[in-house]
Length: 262
Image (cartoon, rainbow, N blue to C red):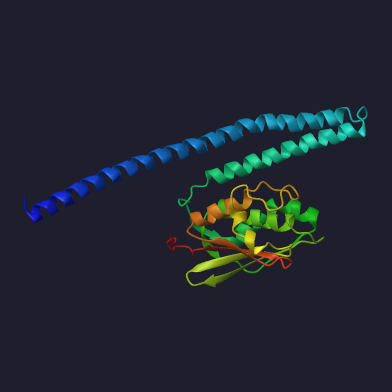
C-alpha cells in the first residue's frame, strides 16, 4: 500500500471515529435535555402539591390561635407564631425555586421592555417591605432594553429586596440608575448597606449561597435567579462593593433590536 493510500485510509478512519463520537455526544445531550426537562417538571409539580398542605398548616394554625387565644398561655402563642413563620418561609422558598427552574438558561424569550415600567412594577411588589422598613428608593431615567417584562421585574424586585433586607441602618436607601457602555446598557442598583467582602462577591450568585446564614431573611435563590436571567439574555451581572461603603449590583442588557452577545 502506497503512502497516499495509507493517508487516505487513516483519514477515513479518523472521520468515521469523529462521526461516531459526534453521534454519541448528541445522544448524551438529548438524554441530558430529557433529564433536565423531567427535573423541571418534577420541581413544578412537587412545589404545586406542597403548596396546598402548607396553606392548610398556615391557615389552621392561625385559626387555632384566633379561636383559643383566651385559653392559650403566652408560650403556646409563640409556638403558633413559629409554625406560621415556618410555613411562610417554605412557601417563599417553593415560589423562588419554581421561578428559578422555570428560567430557560440561554433561551429566554425577549421583546422591547421599558425599564421605567419594570421598576414601577418591582416597586409595587416590594411596597410592603419598603413601607415597613421606611426605605427610600430613588432612580434616574431608565432605558428601553431587550428582555422579558415579567422576568426583569423579578430581577429588580430581588435586588431591591436584598438592598433593603441586608441594610443595617434605620433608613435603607436604594438608588437605581443606568449608563450606556459601548453596545449595552448597564443598570445599577446601589444601596447604603454594610457592603460585601471582595472574597465573597462571586460566591453570592450561587444557588443557596448565603453569607449571613439565618441572620437575615431570604432563601439564597434571589441572586442566583438574577444571574441566570441576565445571562439568559446574553448579559452579565456583578457587584461592586467595599465593606462599610454599601454595594452596587450591576447588570447589562442589550438595546431593543440588537442581537444578544454570547
